[in-house]
Length: 492
Image 1 (cartoon, rainbow, N blue to C red):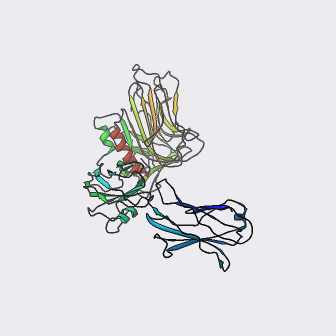
Image 2 (cartoon, one colour):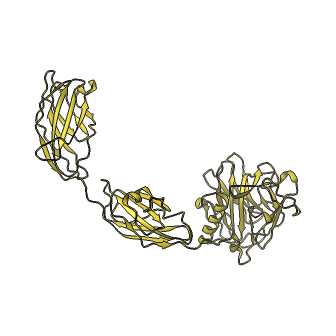
Image 3 (cartoon, rainbow, N blue to C red):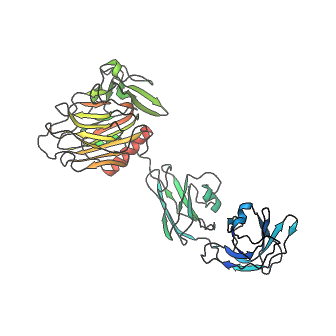
């Protein structure tokens, strides 16, 4: 007679000759993988028919004394063609003594019960992980870092950041809750792939400045065993940042900062009169907020961008046709120094060149031109000497259609250039321009929103714009990026 090999959750069957049916003693073999309790057994089955029921029942004792539970499977016509597999839906058996028996049922007729097979199962991990050495620490005003050690290298590590030192239950940590059941200040989970120290990926975020917090950790292993809850000693976040872009100009650096959220810096008319006060007011004059006091103007009424505000954000809206603001002589940078340009903007996604900020040289060509190409790629274009050909460095990702922080850096003396979208570098070059320190000449016209009064115009929103004649430190970039992100809704 053919044999049936059965594993918990799966059965392999081969039909025998037509006729009566009987069951013979299964032969049970325990898997040796050690990760779960999955016994295998086989038994003979003769003449199965569609609609027959195969029943497996079990008891948590040796020998079999009383049925704890059972599972049925109904055979179909397709099952009778040879070896096949189906799902009994059996549970994972805990460690301990188990006995199984089988029946073959047809209608109201049930076969004699098969012989009993039994096994003492030991393959299931029933030991919970143990967490130790919990660590939590502040990382500035709104973030923190954390880690904890484990003796099991599998499963998932869960954590919450609470304002209370009282540990939540394991279930509450998994659910992202404090011990009170309220939602924790921050929570998360990550896979565990090895023993030892587990650093929290990305740290704790979205916290409140000058507030005491405690991190609580719990690990659930691959068999759903939950560890102890390990709690850190607690930490207090730092004071809220008092950074202002004006801090970057503390040494009287050349440059400018344009801030549409400051209504006192904008006027409707190009002579600096009629204050901008309401949503959709035209802007014909915007004053640089640094001590350099550069004023960009638009003398033509129809070519003035609009001041817009919504949801606590403020921006200049450019129509993509003729809106721009400019100053004829700026003297922000020369061609032997360093220039950093940072603009927070949300430009439309379209197949046109969209200018963010344009600096000309004295010959009215680009000294530095930050824009999006027709493909939406970030681009910095320029030249060091007036006689040089213009050089372009472009990224490869469409940056239109969403708010972002657009950053360009040009080192004229060393021919280096970089463009970043927030903290992502889109392109870099160490041979951007012909390097040198001769023929120092200052920049000429500055234009916001267009390369000229009618070419390569911006279509979209500009929230903030800054240019400074030096390289920013990594901390200054982080502070400025976070500041501009808060002003624009962009992600830093």
